[in-house]
Length: 223
Image (cartoon, rainbow, N blue to C red; front, side, top):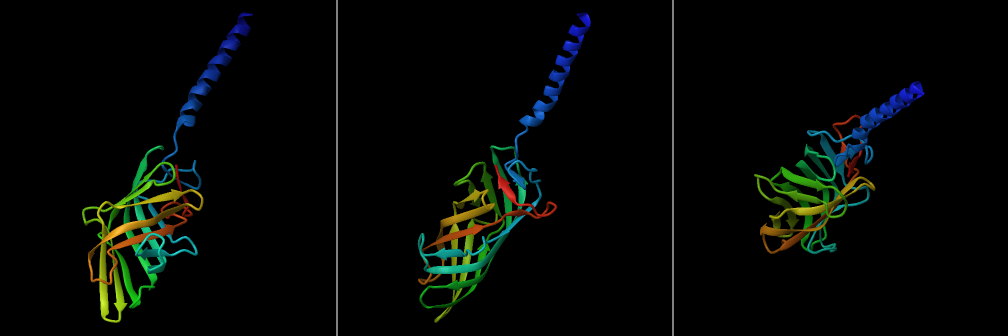
């Protein structure tokens, strides 16, 4: 009987130790940003995230929400560096270093072509918060607020329209397609003639977002 009790006690002690060893691993929370899937490896601080427009979409800058009157760019991409990535739920931060717009056309009367569309005052700070919906906040840094400059070729010559969003712009992420999108985000005209809209509305959807610093450039998930 004494031997049986000793073996039983040893077995219980072993189970307790095993449980203690497993519990911390099970309790580890996923990071806000992971790769491969929602429970995948955490994105490392310093990694580079990149994306082009979602296939078949365009980046637009129009005179009103849902309007087709404005500028449409068939090609756009961004590159950002991860600056923090805590455990979820929480907020990860990125530094948006570059954002390009190409193959742009205009439907504005009197405009013959689009010379350039440029994101100004880079870099920006991008904050991505756990969850879905309106969980992205893009804000300017020491160089100035989030801005965009549109240069148009018109019947009367070259026209430059400079816009800024002093309070930044908001967007959303989706793990379905691994995308980040902005819809009808307003920017105020700070310089430009009457041909320029007094307020421009920016829309674009980028994805899949990938971590090009990780082997195989896996797609990004937000937890």
